[in-house]
Structure formats: C-alpha cells, structure tokens
View 1 (cartoon, rainbow, N blue to C red):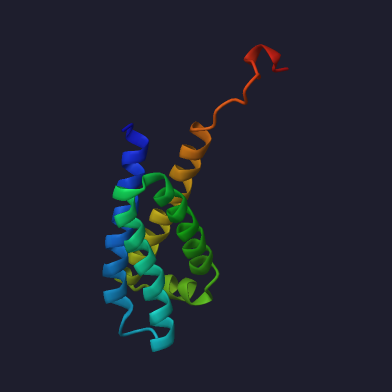
View 2 (cartoon, rainbow, N blue to C red):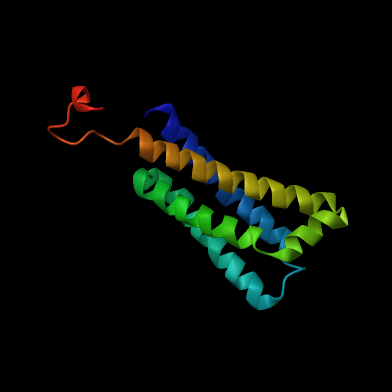
Length: 129
C-alpha cells in the first residue's frame, strides 16, 4: 500500500477518535436533539474508521462526504464564531483541530482521486495540445 492511502486511513481514524472526545466535551452544552444529531454524524465517522480496514476506497469517499458535510455545518454556525471570540481556549482548540482534520480529509482524498485517474484508452500523450 502506498503512503497516501495510509495517511488517509490514519486521518480518518484520528477523526473518528477525535469525534468521540468531541462528543464528551459538548454533551453538557448542547440540547438533547442537537447532541443526538451530532452523535449520529460522529457514529458515521466511527463506522468510516472501521471501514478503512475492510473497504479502503469506499471509506475514502465516505470520509470525503462526511468531512464536507461536517465542514459546511461547522462553518455555517454563527455560534462557533462567538465561541472563538469568547476566548475559551479548550473549545476553540477543539473547533480548530476538527476543522483542520476535515480540511485535511478533503484535500487528501481529492489528491488521491486525481492521482488515481487513468488516461482514456486510445488517448496518447502525443495527442495533447
């Protein structure tokens, strides 16, 4: 296995483990219904972490979708900006590490997809303009 799939696998597993820590941290703060929806998303990351050992390529694409959804939902919440402005170092660090992991998954899986593209049959590089 080349190094890029190993790195993606490690980042996805880290995201799953970090998500469990994240749930422990936000449990007292979030309303019950919001907590359960966040817990469902984190459970999907845990499933994705396990899937990296069984079906790695499927896991990469699932991780990409989960990271995009998590990133979009995190960035779109004004409460997160207020949290950073409040000066709470632990919560801000958790938020920034989570965002960094999501961006890393998006970038690495995007790079993996582009690097695995194969030229079409019958297409020669000499035909390129």
